[in-house]
Image (tube, rainbow, N blue to C red; front, side, top):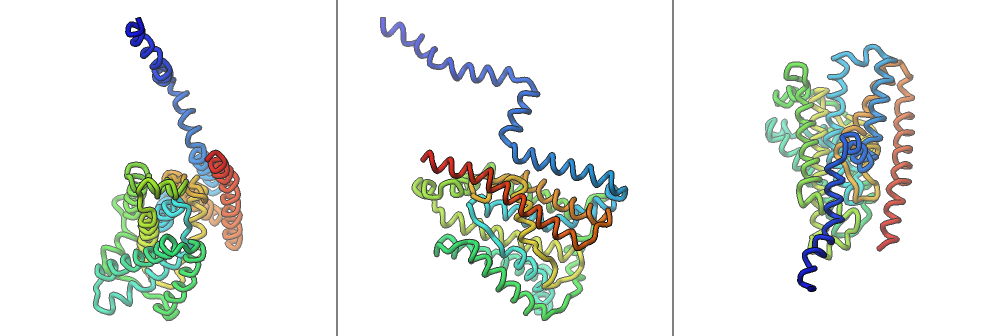
Amino acid sequence: MNDAKRPENAHAAQDPSSKNISRVLRETPVAIAQRIIRQNINVAAVIVLFVVIFTIFSIAAPQFLTSDNIVNMARQMAASLVAGVGMTMVLAVAGIDLSIGSVLTLASAALVPLMDHGLGGTGAIIAVLLIGAAIGAMNGYFTAYQKLPAFIVTLAGLVALTGLANLVAQGESYQVTRPEWLINLGQGSAGPIPYQVFVEIAAIWAGWYTLNRLRFGKHMLGIGSNEEAVRRSGVNTRQVILCVYLISGLSAAAAGLLETARIGAGSAELVQNFELLVIAGVVLGGTSLFGGRATITGTVFGVCTLEVIENGLILVHVNSYWVPIVEGAIVLGAVLLNSRVFGRLKLGTLATR
């Protein structure tokens, strides 16, 4: 008799999952959309914010929606988006990289001198990318293997690399006219679409695929949530962290090349507060400062939101001195919101362990 009841019991044990499957299959499109939004509330919030701000400036400044201005914004945000992908990965492992702005300026300042010393255009570009990767790897080594705080390591890098960039440039700006393909990448277009947009798409796709489809991405998020647990599962967490910082340095150097190509000049004073604005865009997009949660989609909309704000304020003739003040307020607000939301989640997770 017991044997005869087993199939019935087994069927009963499967009922809960069967009901769940049936419930999901019966979901209406609206219910599915609501569930997806709940699961990605931070990304949804920054998308709504982007749409609202974009709409406001479209009404307030008639020239905002012109094709020339849209193309200009697409070019201007290329460096921030490329560097933002690397920064998203750094924050995913609960790290920080304050040196990316200095890596960017060093890449810009060193390009022409490297070409003048016989490397040629393409050789100098490869050298600049390798320098960025090496700086990132050095940051990762001191952070992961020497257990020094990432904030201190990368802050030291920010200061030292700024000095090195000024030393290389000798306080001068260099006109960059070669290689032609780099200048064309920064200033040319395929029809109405700037070539830099294709670079942005490639970087975004690579970052998204790494975080969501590769085991390396899962390891990054796991390290950000609980590094010790990931290490005990057999993952070389120090190697993962080093690679993440290497990617950040490489992406910052690539951002420097893109910005140099856009303006056609190399300089040690190419950008100001670049690292803070990139971090703000990433955090505004929903990536946690505490690690373990990262979204490339959110980073894209976070960076785009900041670019729209800066561009829109200029077009409505707000005093240019107000632009960094507004950006600073956004940085503070994004960090405050991030710490309130993800800080509580982190504490709640620790409390249940």
